[in-house]
Length: 197
Length: 221
Image (cartoon, rainbow over all chains, first blue to last red; front, side):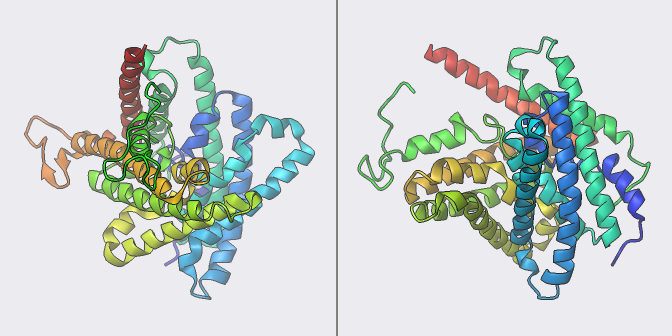
């Protein structure tokens, strides 16, 4: 059963109402670790958006034209992760060649995109929700943008927060989680605008 | 650590197959460096599936299985894997175990498999499994690696169960279908089931762990 929602609606919904980070909790590790500064957050957000859009497209083609016809869909996970790993390797070489500054800023987190669950998650959601090709492109792009928006917002908040006096045990990650909770609540305000399933 | 002599396992002693480090490894994984609360690893899935205790327990079991299995295999192959391709080898091993568990769930617990959705598959990208394979199994003998995998899986499962328990009680007033806060006086707080509740609960759980850790460090001084 294919659903009929247009790709544009899916894109908007993936950014706001179904934000992959704030409602599906994907990509938390790098979100927490890399949201110290707006510049880094922006770089990582861009990298994730780029990788996510293209891997979703690649995985769509591989799943529907290779795995399903051959009856190999139980190998989905392993194939997807291999595609993502290879693709990230490619992006890494690309960034290293054309923007060494960004390369050093992102440091270890570029290879970590491979194990960023948001990337694999987007591909898996695409399969589970039976998207068509255009819808998948919309979803991949939207989910990546949504993730980027969330991490940049968080970086801004954390920069302000470094001046505030947080109670001892809550310093560092716990307060970041709680702020993220508030952010998620704010994003719930978008619910009802558009919805995808 | 204060005690340089780690306590030997009860059954095998210091000369046993895991070199007497079993208990220490176990304590490390479950408490001293609990993957979820202390090292803040693998929180994606922890937040997503902890809306109910039942989901948390299944997810915990999945992680224990995958961790033990992948640690064992990675450790067995550690002297034969070329260093350059070790990452991809680890991912392949982990993915194999995740697929096994996923197929098992689909065959016997279809409803649960539907509820967990993509999050079972996402164990592949769970930093805990990869982290243990990379940091522990590559340097240690198979049996000890299995203990380490089990310990970290248990630590994750325990923290997950705590989060799941609180969210389910506050969010629905029930625990695994049994009413707990069911009186007229309690209105279930839907927020705890939804995304923000997950963030708040995890934040508080980590903070509580920090308080305990702070006390332990203070006692040692």
